[in-house]
Image (tube, rainbow, N blue to C red; front, side, top):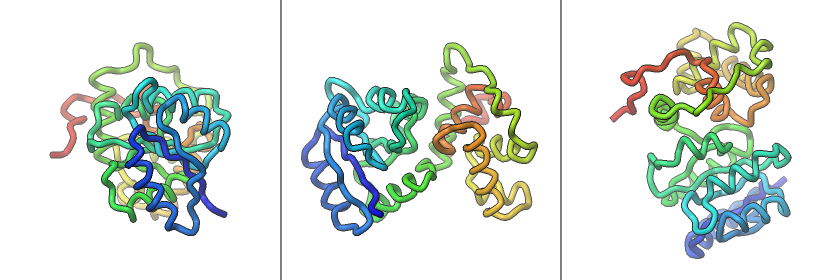
Length: 229
């Protein structure tokens, strides 16, 4: 089955470039395009694509607000990947809290764009550990006005699953978690899948956000939240 993609960007040239790359793939179909956030919301609800490539900065309604409106109700299964010009965009934290599954640079190589779309469609997070650390830093700098209460679903996690969640929240990859716990990477993937299912979160990115907002990751100090140079 083909993966369907909605391309959202206010620049026609950018949309055309992404469409040209994706149209060349047999397993990916560009279902539609939108030029601003409001159109994106309408088109996403109409087309219900697997993945939405969403520009962050757009007139009238930006990508973050569009993402928030699309995913707030929980009725849309589409995964949102934010498109940005900068590696460490100032909107990273807000976008992830809105429900985005990751980020792609607009000048990303074609093969990385395609691989990223496939990964997100399969439920993986498109978020480098360095960006996870950025989320941590943003949380330390400006925590939510009212931290969310610990969801009751956390009680369903086993001790090992909770341990895996805490390590993922620190920015560790599956391979790094496996090394830390002396288990196989396959075992870690299984634990992560169970965590996402039990916490009813879309992907590991949202698990990280939940972990920090609810205090599951413990106290994070400013010195521990620095991004690697």
